[in-house]
Length: 325
Picture 1 (cartoon, rainbow, N blue to C red):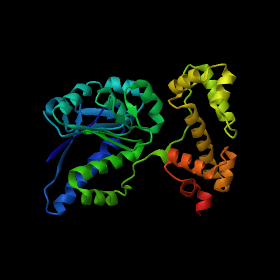
Picture 2: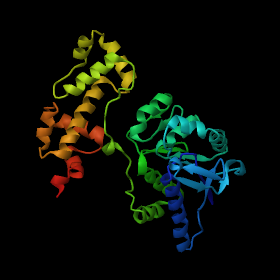
Picture 3: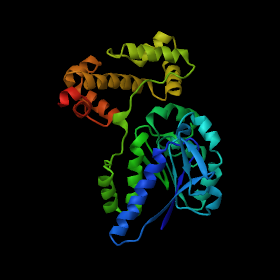
Picture 4: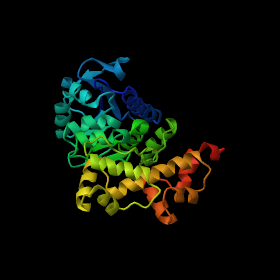
């Protein structure tokens, strides 16, 4: 039997504590109904016996506390709520326990912005990690040594797992159930909880807003120019000349400030404008393409799919309610 420790940090999002507990518990019920032994021992684990979560709205009564667990097999780190730096400070006593358990063979999985607590352990330094796309900039700022993969829903590196944003953590739970209990059980849980199995990307949900929380005013000027003139063909040399900077210097500073190359930033601004048109207008794909400054349908489709995980037609079908009825 695998021992699963679902942490209950102070300020946790309640759903990401209860959700995994419920799904793992249902696996045990299913297995018993098949005359098979239960597979998981699931415990809610805190630093104290009572933990305030969800901004103080709820109190969770834990099953046990960290100092009473000598060994566990899987640690689940739920999503955190509120100021993430403060959350890490309030829950830093979890860190030595998590690292000690990992050294003893425990696997560790973070859900959504639980990735911040995972990263603070050092276990994903130099490794891939996913989190909610809305927290990507703050994560990169706090943990530059971690390879953040903004588009992924699931990462798996040598027993360290992470998931993308919000309720996509359920896809990671299914992934772990398949690993421990097999495909048949995972498919049943997918159907029972109506979770879309095999979803691996959060790209269709990402809203690109640019990243301007930095102090480089010349880079901000370049960003604003791109956003105001995305319909035009903008070159890196044009931007460098406009700012009286060398191309190499501008590219270096732009990447450092925004975590995107200039070309990527231009593409993402164009794609975001295209997404908005596909969601709200009756324009066909070619009209949308021309309006955002593309003339090559293949290049537009390729770029669009790279950032959204969907073709323009698939995206419009998914999000344009007027055209769907």
